[in-house]
Length: 348
Picture (tube, rainbow, N blue to C red):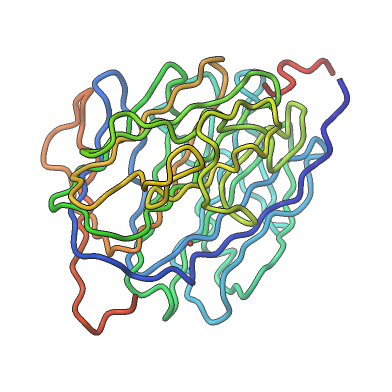
C-alpha cells in the first residue's frame, strides 16, 4: 500500500471566543466499567494552542499559535508508542532532550499503547504568533501532541481543562455533571488519538448524552493520521491548529479519509443531521461515550475550552470504579465581564 501524503500540521486559537451565560458547576466522572480520563489541569482565563506531529522520518516541526503578549501558563508534550510493538522513545524539542525516564506515563492505561507526558513550559515560555518548533523522535514513536495553555486580555472568562489517560477501546464514558443548569456558551472539545489509520474501517465513535439529548451521535469517524501519514510511526491526530470546531457529519464513515473528522468539536453547535445544539439551556450534565469497534485506537486526551470560568476542587470521595475525578465549578460573571485503520502492522 502506498503511503498517504503527509498532511499539513494544523493551527488553532481560541482568543476570539466570547464569554456567554451564567455559572455552572461540573464534576468529571467515569463509567462503572472503567476509570476514563483524569483531569490533569484546569486554567482560568486561559485558552489552548494544540497541535500534532507524526512522521516516519522521526523529525519535523510542531506548531504553537499563541498571540503575542500572552502569558504561557503551562505547556505539555505527549508522545505515544506504536501500539505495543515498541516502547516510547526519547524526544528532542527545539534541540532539548526529553527523556522518557523524566516523563509521566499516562494512567489509566486501558489499551496496549503507552503514552507519556512531559512538562515543557520552561522550553516554551516566550511565544508570539504562529511558530514552528523542531521535534525529533529518537526512536519509533507514533507521533506527538503539544498543548499550551495561555492567557491574555481576550481570554478573560475562558477556562481550559486538560484531561488525559488511555481510554478502553471497548467503551468509556466521561461525564460533566452541572451544579446549576446550563444557559449558554461554547463547549469546545479536542480529541487526541494515536495508532489510527483511515480509510480502513478503523474509527472511534462519540455519543453525547444530556438531559435534553439521549445518546446523540457526535461522530462515527474520529481518528486517522491527520497530523502524520499512513504508516506506523506517524499515526496521530488531534483537534487543533487549522481545524474547525464545526461538527462533522455524525454518520459519515472513515471511507472519505482521515479528514472526514478533524477531532475538534463544539457542543454548543449542531451538525448537518440536526442543527440543534448538543447542549441546551436547562441541561445539568454532558456525558461523552467513546467506542473503538476495531479495538486498536489509542484515545489519550480530551482538551476542553469553555467560555465559562471554571475552578477545580478536589474530589470528596475515595476513587472507586465509578469515580469523581474532580469538581469543575463555573463562576458567574458580573455585567463588566468580557464576553476557540491505519496501515496496521506495516511490514518494515
